[in-house]
Length: 100
Image (cartoon, rainbow, N blue to C red; front, side, top):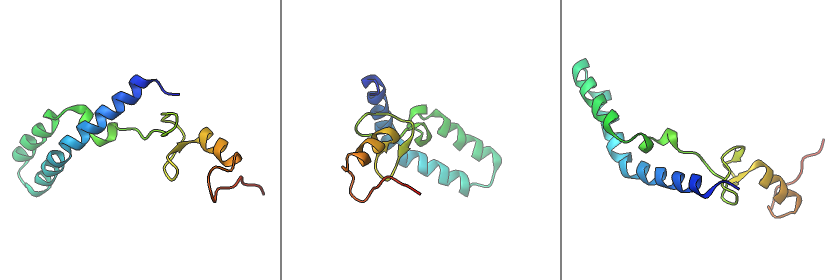
């Protein structure tokens, strides 16, 4: 299980990302519209003034049962080993253990 401080840190990053999403998106649109290099630098400076943790690339997807970030399957929202345990216990409908 992931430490609770890591999970809380991720939640804080998600809140920041939601808060600055529209601002970041509008600044990126302005950069694409402006043709002069000096104006692009000014807008880029405004973009850099935003908090680092508000960038969507700094977010991690987590397993909803354990909080683990690695080996995360988006379709199920679970980490790999938890997914395997649930499939073996027949807790996920339609998912079967592969054999060939």
